[in-house]
Image (tube, rainbow, N blue to C red; front, side):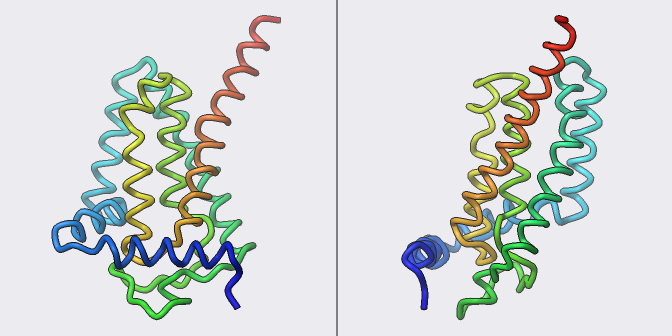
Length: 184
């Protein structure tokens, strides 16, 4: 029997998975879902990271903060997936995922968490301006994961929260501790 909360989650899932289906939107959503799983996507990410290091200043700080933040976010996501044990919609529901069937845990979405952590880190360093420029990235990645059939909306929402906690919260806490230590 499906609980009330999960029922709403499943309804929202189908609203996005089936209700948003459009020929022009599908390749866009597949791109946002899987771009960093491709060799060109990964090479592009490494080149951008190297450029940020080379640029110096806050850009270098951002690039250096991303490493521990993304490691913590991704590892926590993987631990929670194993602990919660929720099946992905492409396993639990009678659907076919657009990007292939995944059998690992569903909750939380590591893709959504990592993109939220990236934006949270940028916001912690550059302020609201970074959030205004980058908010679309975790939004599109998260929605794409539902659209392609590999996550429920609550998986994505939990990923966004987890990523923000590590990205913005972790970096702000570390900077606060660093500044407090320097002041004493």
